[in-house]
Length: 142
Image (tube, rainbow, N blue to C red; front, side, top):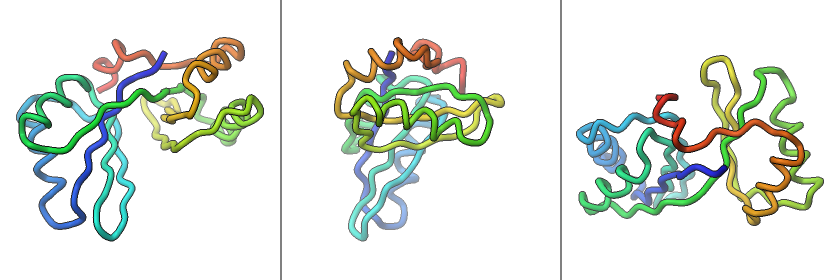
């Protein structure tokens, strides 16, 4: 029910992100979504991609500091308020979202988030009948 997300710690200076993108390009790994959270010193570049385990390996081989974590990917109707509805469900269940980001794909909203309680989030997703994306289906999204 969760998917793998790659998180890369990069210095906030010219040329650091291109190194990451070139490694993924050379490996033939497709990006599906990405986001950067930055400070004045460094950034965290989070990526959802077609082959996260191989991406992790290739980035490590290139000497890039990278971690892999489990996140959830919900598919939402592309209508105003659907993200709010989804977040409300988790909030009412007492589940904290550490961070989230979203994008549109094939006419659907995709909501990516990390939580402080994966097991409880899985139970809520099942109980509420929320549509989620599984990792084997990621390659087909790219």
